[in-house]
Length: 233
Image (cartoon, rainbow, N blue to C red; front, side, top):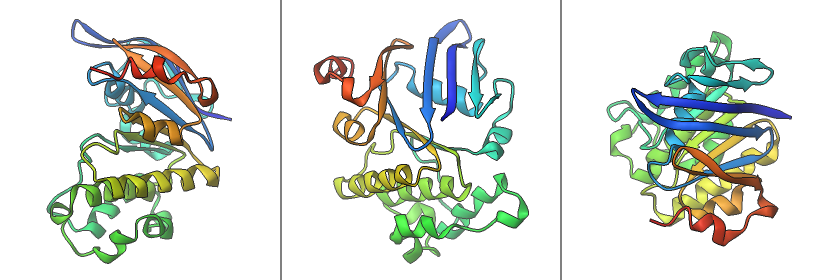
């Protein structure tokens, strides 16, 4: 079942058009990889999905309802969890307090940190009282993903989770994504430039260039050379 349907959306920053007729689908129990170089529109697409920037044409449906005009906080309450590029954790708050910021999207009776967060990332349990800013880059990335999981998302969006991360933590993040997919309870959109990581995890893919989707399909149809030419500088 498709949890997210993005249909022919356009997005502008002033007079500059960032997205041109972009469509994307993300299904429950599957990982959809969005690939492309810097500046091709990947983050703009995520901002459109999460409600951080309005689209001018097209539609975005979550579940069976249009969320095109819905503000970000309402999309979060519906179950859209977002891990932004650069992590954006709160450096002066403890790990525990950072995780608890995810409570804002939950009804009072659900405001707990799921055991799953610490099962996926045991380091967070060991460092609950450490300030976020004292963590390594890889640990901060795990914290950012954990914070999104506190919301019990039905759609998890990860914007370049491997950027600037050491290989051992990249493997941990990959295992976490695989486990989340196998549970069959959420759709995952993975934005990446790291081809091997995305190919290993994805079920479907979309390659962006100049604000458009230029290649897309099931993982089995992916032709590596065609995809890589859109990732090379």
